[in-house]
Length: 255
Image (cartoon, rainbow, N blue to C red; front, side):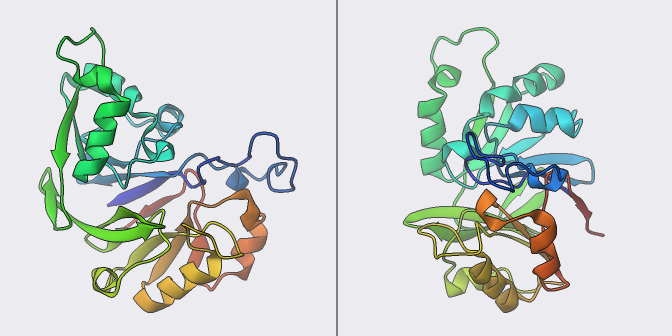
């Protein structure tokens, strides 16, 4: 399994429009963060988790030529806004793109991309196949995905576990029974917005480290990072040896 971090930024990305802080002015490529998303490739199968506003540039940057499915965590715009750009995959593959998400997420996609589901379809629109999922394991092309329900303030969001890899974004609370699903994972990705103060809907760095301590993965990566976290190099130097700030373009391989 190879996981590529397509984007590791929060909803505004980094740099933030109009901001002149040290992070937004940084020349370190690791401080340039597109909206959060990952690409997972397993035995030739290609999955993207969320299609944010930067989806097109992420596909081009990583030279991703094939897409088998899109799995959604939730329906916020920074996770769905780039969905129209699956069209080149429709054309290349001559097939619909399967979408997986909670029923409420797929209903919202039907509203925001209504033209793709119209009775009389305009030529060239995205071809999408909706697959509603619940909080129970499901299969995508023979791969078993286990949803991890977390809370994003009052909004239920799905993280996912595939084998020894677990991915949690947009969370500030995980119930005990959901936390149990993460036990034994070798690699854990979890969101960490900034160092503090406490945030309404996202884990801060200390809270994310507490989750990591409870799960005890071999390695953990932090994502959904805002410019208020600080410079990548400085924060990375402060973290425990098995915890890292993810950055755009980072690839990790699980045997």
